[in-house]
Length: 341
Image (cartoon, rainbow, N blue to C red; front, side, top):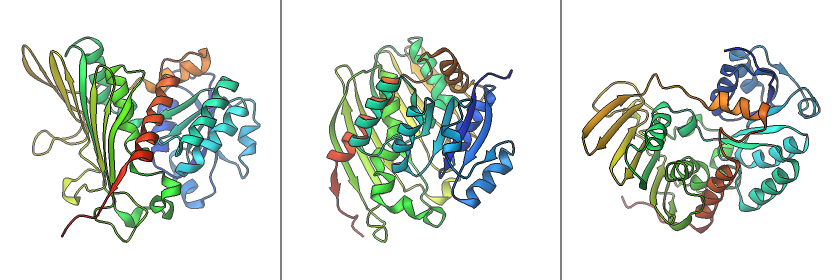
């Protein structure tokens, strides 16, 4: 990939999603300049993969550097929006791990500053943008392979492995709640595949079913969302068994008026090896598509948007609406009790 004039830096290494984000921009030819991280262990690990990045002790060294056009971040969840506001006011675009905001108040301020500055506030919804089967599904839906999309089912189960989690992971004010956090992926996909520009939350539930030792954690959540032409169901949880062999059996089913697509994103249980499995059912029959060779276009599209001031990689209003739906669902969710033994 030829180099581009885009130079970027990183502030905050608190989630491993930062590696995919950095990789996407570097693969598009952008240059990684510097990194700011308070934690020595996180920086040491990052520098092993990206030794070219200079460590700076003060993030102002990045914000005040006029040669840097973009800042990436996977900081602690509730610190991301305030940082993004600083970044935009410094005249730079911001690409952040999900969730990009953890409250409706944060979202209102982010929207205000984004409009004032004209800078980009992009959230890397990796379960679509960095997942090859989901990219392929987008191509098929756009081509009319299943007709008009009328329903989606998005499932986002995860390994918890609490011994590997930092303390902030278990604090509601810092991680934002399970619907704000994990389900932001599924809201992004619902909007993307239905093409909806408006939607509403019909019902939402959260629960701590099996982890009373972490009372602020929600280990289960579900949502019913609708728009004029489509509905969607979302389920997210922290109950992936160790025996699965991957972090989660993420699935997406897209129902259209002329067929449906099912994605087994990370594992085909009891079936084909590896990831990126797509099943297409239409009026002619059934078809399996191995998506491992599908290009991931987000990195090059995002870099082009930075250079050309376009909005092709991830629409700004789409991004904000996905956040708004996740935050609204979180705020309205009925909290259920623990599971019975």
